[in-house]
Length: 102
Image (cartoon, rainbow, N blue to C red; front, side, top):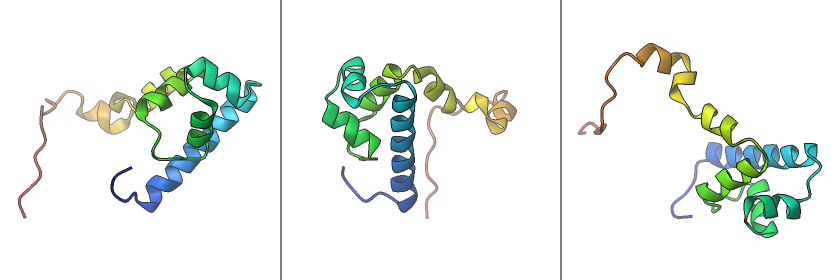
């Protein structure tokens, strides 16, 4: 992965990895079975479960699909599921946001 990741990002990746491992275990799946469901290698599942930031978004989504949790992940990132998103939903959403000049 290019660049440095913040401590908070690294911690979040580890927590997500632990959550994925817990989902897998709750469903009585081995990492090999989950890998087969997701169409990835067992090593890749292991990397994801250990919070490896080099694992791609597509892999994460396939693993969540393999766990039956893809819809939950989509919902978790839906801004209309938040108070802020609902409050601002009547406002026009800009096509592009530009940074302010320093």
